[in-house]
Image (cartoon, rainbow, N blue to C red):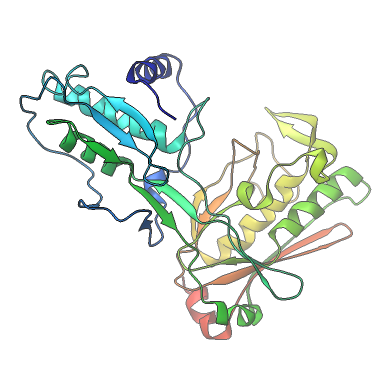
Length: 333
């Protein structure tokens, strides 16, 4: 994945002129006991600002960014050409934009940040593993590049792994008590909408949310496509009702929000519909769109819990359950 700095600089110029959609969450805020993905030889502390005076650098001082997992060269930087000596403030600004692009991606690059896919309990009580989260610490990368800019050095991307935080032996007890619950209703005669609600609710059932874990609706439910069984149904787009695959799924995300919000967890991303919806009170909705709008929260309660969903004809209920020993802690979070 080698890139030239010229290509990236061109992209940054276009980005500044045209603009792009920002992620609602800052990748560096998503930390749950992150562990460095390699054994670093240098200090890996998270530095938010770098206050150094640039010095005379070698004409051959290039900084090479390397993926620590594959040892592939990500890109090469020429600090002198980018203003390390002549305009240090501008140099920092460019590095911050570059780090942001590497972490969060852009139109032709996915980015290194990866949202957690949480574990769940299977039908037979077995644990179905998800995927760990990955973050690229942007401020740390900028600090490392600046430090390496004088003499020219290799810089390994500061990639960190985020693992779900719960104990296997306590999973069975997470069904003990209901801490929060919310129910919404829909017309069962709308078959496409009903099916979409059913499928998305099933995708949320028995998800284990450990202490400090991050939840993403789009990550856990996945893409809404015909291949995955989702059907055409009406949905709200730009204040209009239009037909789309997966229409109605926002009722599931909104029902989940209203259950989760009772536990006073930290909501990281939520969006309102452009029109009012009838299945939740005004202002209590959480619209989602795969690849753009998401509903995210972090379990800041200090204890693990499990999400339970119940679908029946015209009715959707979502519960938040935990172990009896955690009941008071989760209620008072």
